[in-house]
Image 1 (cartoon, rainbow, N blue to C red):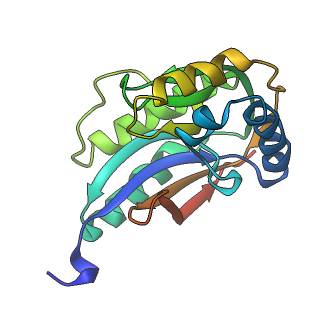
Image 2: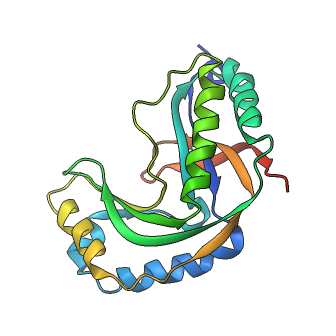
Length: 197
């Protein structure tokens, strides 16, 4: 199998608007400054350019199916207008040993849920299984490393509080490749669609 034929890890997401990323990063930096060095080191922090709200993780996808992915996302996006999103409280998701630290959404939740439902239908029509659970709209800010300190670190972030509410216009839906290796995953946007007014 050549490199061009290898499956690629894909997900569909709503990128955070570029103008909102510095404000969000500054707010997160203030929380990080209140953590102990042990807790800080137990988490892998998401870089500002990678901030997004995931709609659907597709996982390992054959390159030949990229056209199907594009068709599904385009079908889901047709007729969806831009909307506002805003961050809310810090929460924890995932396994106890390596939890994920997230910002729950307080604005734009219904719109994200509706768009996700449209995407699920469009993907199912092209052979992807329907998701087992309904979406919980959130923005990931850190992931726990596989260490005994990760849960305590994540809980410390959740307890730190004081994170500013950040809002932004959701204007695009994107298909993103997650490239593993060398520590933090690297996200490469493969294609995107502008939501039309």
